[in-house]
Image (tube, rainbow, N blue to C red; front, side, top):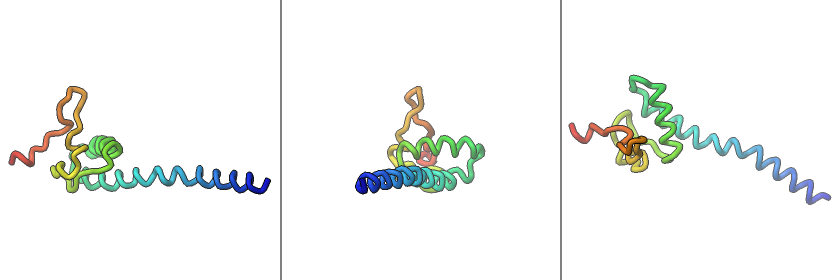
Length: 93
């Protein structure tokens, strides 16, 4: 009986800790996307899409523009038409 009580208590602790662990990734993406989108004209849209990419790729390029080679997954994402999600014009300047 004692071992089953300990097991149940341990499971409760694990379940209580699980949401906190899931938030860690979100905090990472939120922080990185805040920086990435700080100068965006449509900041709300930038934060939404940056968050989607970060959740999938687990990285966000540094700075507010360009630097996509730091995160190949982010750089190589395609839209529904198979085209790049965003053009990296900084390479063409």
